[in-house]
Amino acid sequence: MHDIHKRTATMLPTLLSKLEAEGYKVVTLKFKKSSAPVEMASL
Image (tube, rainbow, N blue to C red; front, side):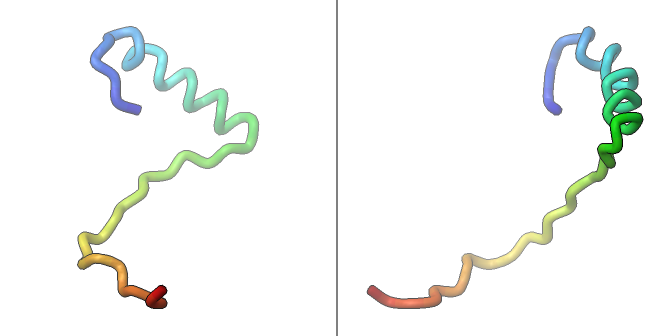
């Protein structure tokens, strides 16, 4: 979530707790910087 409003930051712990209580798992995604995808087929 990216938000500049204080209310979002205030309610975030409650939202995450409720989602986890419903069985969701909160994770952080990390991406490696890589080169452009390899072309698989020429058309």
